[in-house]
Length: 554
Image (cartoon, rainbow, N blue to C red; front, side, top):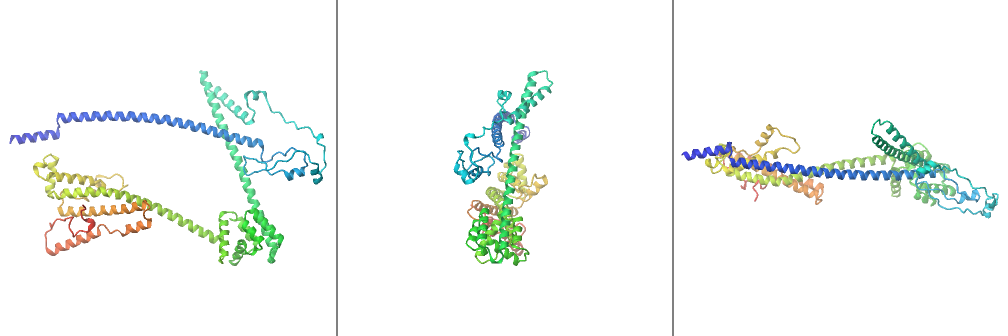
């Protein structure tokens, strides 16, 4: 008997105080962990330092590239300003002015940076050209002396190598900033003041380059805006002229000269289909006139000129109007009435609204399928845990006995109390493992009360075998249902099936608890009719009475 008490004392000493070997092992593990953390911190610091070096090198490279790009842009803008593209100088020649105006090609102004002459003019005088133009012929030997250009050279600027006005302004601005920084330094260290001056000079140069670039870009935007306005005014003038010609023709239609003029104007607008139609004497069949006639039938008050003016003031030159014209041509060709701009815009708005709706639905479905796929993968692990828990619970006596065995396990006496101590220990561990999984994803931190509620939804060690079997069966059914949803969602994500087919298949899945509820109701009715005790037969997951998806697999 003394040996038993000695053994119990040793067990208590090991439980509460530990042994020297355990303490020594623990100290060694702590020392190894501390050394590992120190080494990991050293490696992390080294990696961060290397990354800092790489980032600095990358920033320096970007800075040099930006400086080179800015210098190139300023050089191009400076050349454009010097060339004075808006008013190019006339070609120096001895030919008559009428001949020059006729032969000299127009300058291409679509690109403000590039100026190209389409044709070179012969500089040698031609007597026949003077005869054709009627201008007086002058002897080339008595030509006027060459115009002398103003010499803007300066010895100081030549010494510095600054021939351009912009370079001179940049240098002057930088020197003023540098001098101000040196004088305002008020530092006894001369070299430090000089360093401030160099820094101020560099900053002034960067600021001046940026300002010059912004000024050049602003001027280019202004020029582009002017060209856009000029093009819009030109199109409005052409449309107004076409409207006036059609209005002047009256009910008799256009004559040959009027048709040719309207066709030329349509071609100038780029509408070659309308130009060919007018030249083919099919003016009455054009979509524009059909649209005007349809508008009159629907209550439009005004002439054809008013209709064209209304279109030109609205969306006549937009892609929407061009699309409507093309659609109306097809509708008129097939015998259908032309659409008004109001109806066409309403239809386009409906299409745009439907597109946004379907885009939003598609995004939501993608998120839903992604969540289902992740839950399906997790369900495989849940099923394995449920099977382990089910097996362990079946090998325990259940009820209060399980609590006694669990208490003995906490003191290391489980094997002395019962042969089922290992099963109770496994069941308790699996329940603790499944508790965090009951928390809904994204619900944040759970309180102790929440964790108790989650644990209450799982089988209990002190519960009856029948109740635990029912809970395990329902958990297995829900896990199988999630796994099936995940499989369908994975097929949709891999484009094996469409979204609509996937949703139909998901909706066709049976309720994971519907058959179980019906089976449970039948069992309760059978127990009530037979006056069986509350502790009826234990639920067998392999029973044929259970639905297929609630039975134990494997």
